[in-house]
Each structure stands twice: as structure tokens, then as C-alpha cells.
Amino acid sequence: MSCLHPPTIEAILEARARIAGMAIRTPLVRLHVDAPCEIYLKLENLQPIGSFKLRGAANRILQASRAEIDRGVWTASAGNMAQGVAWCARALGVPCTVVAPDTAPAAKLDAIRRLGAAIVPVSFTEWLEVFETRAREGMEGLFVHAFSDSEVMAGNGTIGLEVLEDLPDVDALVVPYGGGGLSCGIAAAVRALKPGVRVYAAEVATAAPLTASWRAGQSVQVPYIHSFVDGIGAPRLFPEMWRLARELLDGPVVSPITEIASAVRLLATRAHVVAEGAGAAGVAAALSGQAGGGKIVCIVSGGNIDAGKLAEILC
Image (cartoon, rainbow, N blue to C red; front, top):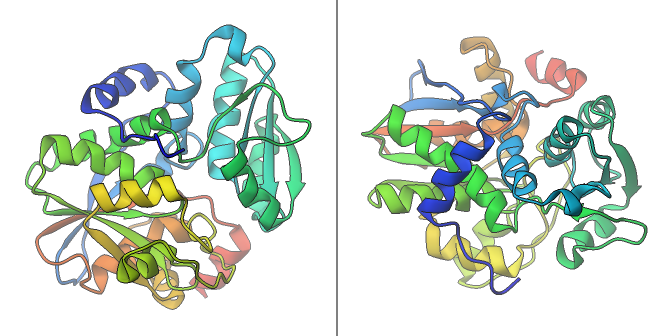
């Protein structure tokens, strides 16, 4: 989608009003820990589905006509966007189908089923292809893209509005980078209202295409190692999202998987916050000083982590 544009501030403000009945305004709390900066947590893990994805899914679906959704809605997702789409579909009384990779964690798949959605399992490679083609044999109804969609990004951008209202003197935000829809959506809001505030994209070292591309000055492919940090990371960037990232973001920050596991542990034991790997990625980067000093907001994007994996990290 070479014509993809970041959402305008007007679209983000409209999204906030539109999704108010679906998504909640999440709290912003201080993380009291020794660090090179003041760390604040934007707790998107407290959304009804345990993830920020409800915002973008709701904004996209609620703008569709009844005729568009009568045959159902579908998405490609490893878990969180699937839950957002399924949540909205159940509320509207329409069927939902999810194309999920065979690497998706059990906790997220179980949640998708609880919400009444059907799951079509595919290989990781086939799953990535759906993001590019926006099609899959046998799928019908409204397709909701997990990140490469201006309306989805506008929904995500409402997080930026809330952060700037709750912490007007924020210096930087650190946002997990999966496909780029969260970081670019938030950055669009921040750039419009407070362009001096920095917005960084957090990646895990086992799958960090944005970091490698930023250094190379062009989009490059990287080795991909699957890990418990399943909500972010991919072998490559999508061209339209790479263009938006260069336009909107101040750069990537990348953390080893061991530091992200430590951040998950810290959040659970010190802040009593359950975060999945992607949700802790920004905290790991802020703790290491990569986001600089001052007041740093870390977007805890979700809390849907397998109980067994969480227990393993906490031991």
C-alpha cells in the first residue's frame, strides 16, 4: 500500500469518540525503580482483551457499513489483533475468522476461541503473506489489517492523546514495534500536538528489522528467531510501514531477550503488572538508558503471556 498515509490528528480525535464504548482509557502510572530516567507505564494490558489492539480494531470496524460486515470480519494475527477483532465482532453479532501462524502462543489462541472466533492455522510464511496480499482463499467479509491501515493507526493514536494529557511534560515515549501500526499511530498524534517529544520503537534483538534497516538506510531482511516475545519482531519490514517509520519515529531501540525477560519479571514483582514480552520491551530499553533521560513513557502494549512462560521467567 504505497498510498498509505499516517492518520491526521482530526482522525485520531474522531477515533477517540468512536471507540469510547469498546476500549477504555488506560491508566498511566510511575514505575518506582532505579533507572537513568523517570519511567511511566501506559497500561494497555488492562484493556478488556489485555491489549491495545482493541483500539485499532474497533475504529476500523465501527466505520464499516452493516453491509460490509454482515458476511463477517477476519484478520491475520498471532493473537492480540485477533482478540480485538473477535471482541468487536461478538459485540456486533457477526462472525469472525482468524488466520493465525502455527507459532501463536496457546494463551492467545484460547482467548480467541473464548470470544467465538474460528481459527485457520497456517505456517509462519503463509501468515506473513496475508499481510501483503490482504487475501486468503476461503476468507470473506471485511478484512481488518493488524497494522497497515490508517483507521487502525488512528485508533492506536488515541494512546498518544491520553499520554500527552496525563503527562504534559513527557520527554519521550517508547513503543513496541511489530508491524509499526502502534508506534506510527502514536507518533502521528504526538507529532501533531507536541513535535518536540521523542518517539522510539522498541524491538527484540532476535527479530529486529527496523534496527537493521535504520542503520542501513534502507529496508533489509534479518534473521528471525522465534521467542516468547511473540507480539513484535519479523524477518522484514513492510515497505509502506518503513516509509512511515522514517517519517514519524526518532529511531529504534533494541534489547536482548534476556533483558526483556528481566523487565517482565520486574514489572510483575515490583509493579504488580503482568506484561507479555512485547509489552515489556519498552521498559527494557528505558532501563538500559536507550531512551535517554527525563520522563519516559513505556507503552505496556499487552499482558497476554502464557502462564507457563510467565512462571518460568519468574523462577
